[in-house]
Image (cartoon, rainbow, N blue to C red; front, side, top):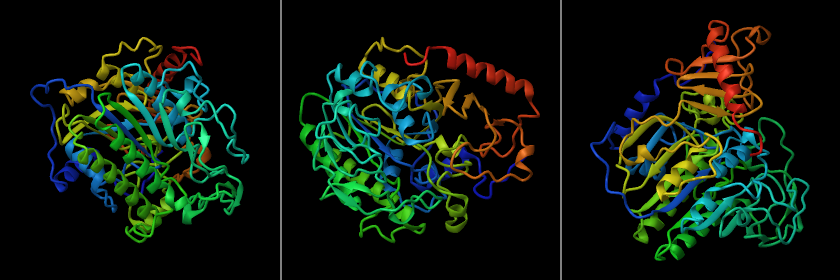
Length: 487
């Protein structure tokens, strides 16, 4: 049965061509010959929170947001148009990013001490490693939702490979609210903070956050500028060192609460979310300027992405004539493409040619193998095929295809085999309310889409192609069973 998507039905490649021309760039297919391999680069991994594929102008020429910093990265680097987070929610996607493993394999709310992580990999190859921003992967002796915090909290970033950490334990809408430095709270959350119980579709709107304990000097509106300043301080401090650095800058924004500073209030045509998203882009621009000012842009590898899709309902698409997920159905939490297809840009002027576009399917888990290739690490801990290197694409060949299959989410699973996509349950599986043309009870038990001709997942082929459904289900089960859980 066909499901209608009200907005933005256009072929992705055509959209990107238009975007590139609008931004003064060119689409490069395959460049003749690689650049010489440079020295080990500094690495800056920028992860924003809940920004959709359709928000940056470089990925969506119909975007109503101004994103000059992200556009600059795309113009000076390489865009991936088929990149995915391993889950469509915050915690699990970050687990896959930092471990190179599908969260379906592990107890993903906390990284166990023996697991290889990106900072561990780079640290053993001579890097100084730092994290600034949102951790959200647990501590040994701290439970955030009950409002408690300890003076010394182990099991976090500095116990999982980072030399230093400044940031938040979790999301900006969940108490307790306080900054951490390494293992300690900068100020303990001792006061009762005002907030709002918001368990509805409006949960992220209008600057709402849950009530709970808060540090005396903590102000939600100051968090994004503060983290930006901390990242710049780190770059300034490490730029002239002989040892390369790895900075994981994990903004907790534009995830709710949407709290733009006065400078950005009213700056966008799509409401407070747009204001906040444009502030995040401005912060990215400030961090890129720090690389410029220190003269290290040429040999700094910058990766920009978002942890999952946006919180942007159908009513928001209609009200603002803007789709944060571009042509894709769904949003954060969903198995539909809008939940996990994310903007992904790589810039490394010393090696990567500008104005590039790759349509290779990649996932967050692939960053691990790519970094191993980059530094010449044999990556002996690779116990699964969850991580596949996209380093060949960076060196010369934007047409190189990294992988044939990809697993996203775990309860209602999305499974890709080339352009075919299987979803093991009916409906979006997350935050979106299904909008069927007919009776939901009459819908097939699962979903099958051919993304080559149906990028918006409007035409479910489950009942029409049972042999393909069974083939993909067998492939999915084989991949899931390939390794024991919790390796």
